[in-house]
Image (cartoon, rainbow, N blue to C red):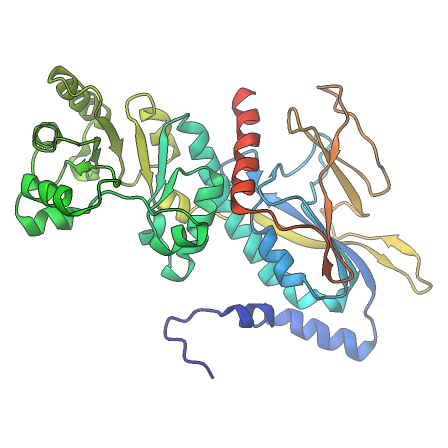
Length: 400
């Protein structure tokens, strides 16, 4: 047994279904002994997107990696696709369709759902914050609010969802970008005063790193902001991380800092805020500041509740038969989306063409065949391609 002091699942353990729920293995045992395996079609749909009427699908590439090599066909929406729970006719929208013998993939239902539930939740929340922040900078400070084993996952979701930068070193490394961040309060405390700490940072850290002073350690934010502006010649901004116990009217504090800096000729200095900020805070302060540091709002975002259900199977003579549990719509379905307004329409599997009722243009089929007989048949998108795809759709949402 490989030593695992941090109680983490390895990639090999995930791929060998060690992270699945035990009842799937028991189901396998029963089906095998009773010779009841059948060719099925299953759909993955969202039963809840908490806090939003739309979601951003993430984790698809993990799912495809998980299912590659199994004798099945897999159709998915592309990574980063915007979706809703239901279309205008109340039909749940499939984001993934799997066709194959049930026993070929049954044991992978748990990790499959885990990938997309968790990643879609964090990516959706990031996209909502990106929308609220308008064109202002948003940095992900969520590493300290997540299990360290998944900090690269948090970084990935934050980045494709629209964050401008990532503080986590490993997350940024895997994304192929430079990590971003300012300084912690501990640096100032260890030096004993703010000005000495700011000057030491300025003296020793490479010049390409922006000089952003943390201005709430000991004194009033206004006083520390003025001290920073007058002490550091190449200062680019200040960050307010005011604790909730001292925050009072945070809006007034920000306005006061802005006034005092402007009055003294420091109009080019930017103001950034952080410290337990949520989506509502971003909406409230977006016109007062130049950027936000967001932590647990992203890393602790509620997951999107996806479910996997059998909707069709073959009978004794090999004919397809629609089936479904209560509360689900039976039969395989196709999914079309308008690329102009993002409206989605669910149809019978065999339908090939649909028109947007609003935009009067042809809808695009968005379920793409990704795996055929166990082999990947589509190129994997780059992280930057996925990020651009998300931001392009977000602009459509913004203009609605």
